[in-house]
Length: 414
Image (cartoon, rainbow, N blue to C red; front, side, top):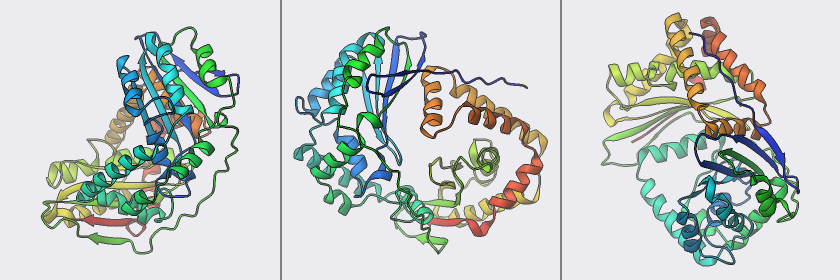
């Protein structure tokens, strides 16, 4: 079956102060999504957890309104204001009915331009996050995720650094304010919009975000940080003596998305463990019944990525699960993928992409990922071409290059 995949283009506007606005309009429904993106992830912090705490507390009070008042203003119009902090970027995303956006923009601007970072809000945040950490540390899968990233990237690298009681205790309002002032500036802001947009949306954005050089100009240098993976590759951790399940993680470093093997590896990974009909699922879930689900995925980090196989299995079958994972890696190295299986995976991947492009909100997310990583539509279409044309022989060579047992970190937490 031949699918024709087309990435709908975006419109670009520039606010008076230079902020770029990327827009995918649609009149299907009376809703819109407006996202402000800043280079304010953990990559840029000098003290642990400052990036995520800053992002979270911006919404928890300004010089004019409390956290409760801000939430009431947003909920009154049936809207959502979500925040997120990742490794590279941090975001504030407004989901709203089109007719209410003019009423909501002042609140959004206040949150982004005038956060208070009060001592009371920080104290509450620290207490809540520490309580959540205590609960999470009892869960084997949470512990496994922390350790595998530490082994892959090193505990001092942003990709491998983890939260701790000490790091939460060390958070200070002046550190949050300093991080905010440096990262959340007009010249580091990018805006992505999709949906049914009012005719005056660009003048409105100019009014609230484009009319001044808010927070001043901050020229950011992206530091190149050394990756220091663990030397020992095989790890067993005892975490919950009463638990009935263990967490299995098998992972290896892998080049980032700019490497020519990356799009090819997405196909091989899908065959291996990337969807419900994968080799790992068929063997370890369907045949052996060791787990409810097992997946492998490729991290999409900017500096470096990793291939990570993860599952939770009964304590008594964790070691058998590890052995079966290696067996499936070995089969892909020794035997070419049958044509019918490759065709099925091609159709599944193209179908998934078509589903991901169904609607303006999904299309702007695809463009956002390309733009934030300095890529264009050629990257997207090259990936589609790779899915359609990669051969079983190429996949076998790829498996022989990247599926060697000695390259993987192996962790079981029980």
